[in-house]
Length: 220
Ligand code: T5A
Image (cartoon, rainbow, N blue to C red; front, side, top):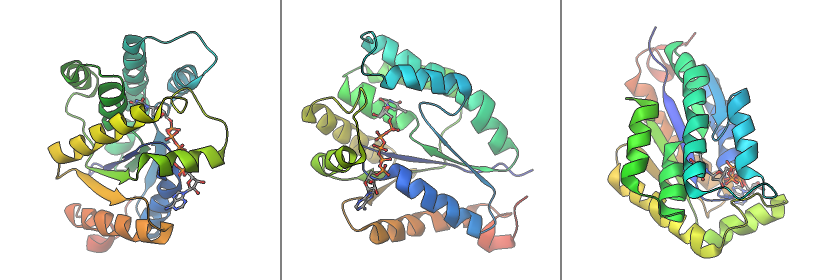
């Protein structure tokens, strides 16, 4: 069985990750690729409980260390019970946020040590890294405005604009550090143009995997 591909979507609040995840899923399925869609924090029963605790704006104050460890605790469950089994079965995994979000939010936003995040990344993930990451980038105000229209804010969305500026800078730095894996997509353009840019980036992945889509045909 040929291992599936692991694709992650990243970006600040309201840039359009969830919207475009549905689009990518449809696109891959049209090419006969078997795909699962999941998210972080979350993706398993326990990880979803951790997500609820992390996003709850009315709960006990969460320390920066606890926040970081909860992200990786949820991730460990997600990898073991969802991501790895799916990839091993040849399915593609589309994930709404992954560890680049930790570098951006806990590293950039909360100023936690990058070496600590790297250590946890290696502990929890071993060699697992996404095959492709789409970083949707837009000025902070645009994302916040879109998120505001969508409804009530969670614990992260209540942060100051300066926090989200730091998150955005940290994401852009990740893209600079990993130019092969992370592809930058301008998200402050009409949705149809965003999706065209996404297709341009995803399509070459088919060519890397001889059992998929345009190269040979149907994936089981
Ligand atoms: N977190 C997560 C960490 O701190 N560390 C970590 O390691 C991880 C994994 C999770 C929170 O956890 C934090 C980061 C987050 O704060 P979340 O729900 O995954 O929260 O993330 P959010 O950013 O809050 O998700 P949102 O749903 O707010 O944003 P999306 O998914 O980026 O945006 P989406 O698709 O819902 O779109 C928002 C609105 O904009 C419109 C859509 O229709 C929608 O109404 N829209 C557009 N409008 C015009 N033009 C376009 N091009 C548009 N694209 C979308």
